[in-house]
Length: 360
Image (cartoon, rainbow, N blue to C red; front, side, top):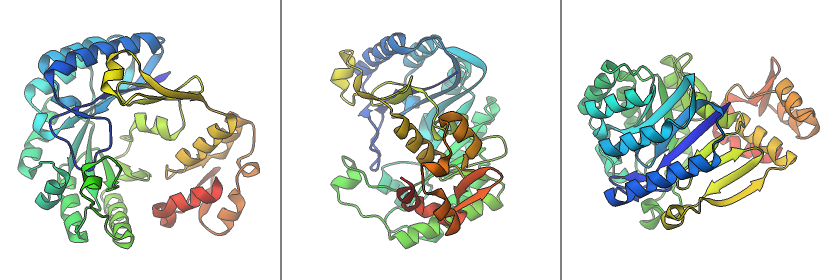
């Protein structure tokens, strides 16, 4: 079984907070990039049955009709399961009947729509656009084309944002009735517009209040809080992302993509010139047994259900408490043991990194 991520780095504009590998859309570059993407896939993919396929970016929805057709040809390389979860990232302004028709033909059955906010001040800060009436109309069109699994993104913790601003954003997103909501607090990364203009994060206490409100509001609205930042209606959890959090192997193709195959973790080059020359991998290393277990713990505890102790033993032939100081953290209430699982106490999820540092 395989999961595959494909990175499309092209964007019509650059968001102020984004540190993913991206370039402004240039028609002269897209063709050569897709050709090299096809070559990389031919070199690495070994015909496994593909259970999840995720096309992200960048902004995959900015591709033209001809470019989407070329991408569809590339995807035919894969041995897709009949039940494959096939996600495609879109910006609202790119959604048209032509795009939706092409995605249907391609086999896409899950859309991830980057909205982030409806607040004009926040949108201006992020260098994005969104209008509720337009978004509502576009999602109605998406549903009319038969897409019944939609994720929307929400960003919070923007400088000068207040809790009342977040509440308004969240209420509007809930009116759209998406099956899945991904939430992100602003992190000011190196080599971003935010970093260059020396933006500052809001106070941690305010950000924590926002996070706790999001969890409470979405749970009361029928969404399962299944991972630190992700919420889903029943049976609409992201199968692809659960693969990451379950420490499963996956292919990553494209500029700046990362992967984990046959015990090796790798990162692709972020240099467009190098990628077009066929120099895909920037670095790779064989993961040691200890690193595998460390990743299992760090990723598994992001899930609200946590880590199944029997599964951990079956995978690594060792009891988790013999490797990590689990019992002291259970005694002090930071971890909870229940029904064969250990998980982070919900009231400490927001500071989970401090708990992980105590474990690893």
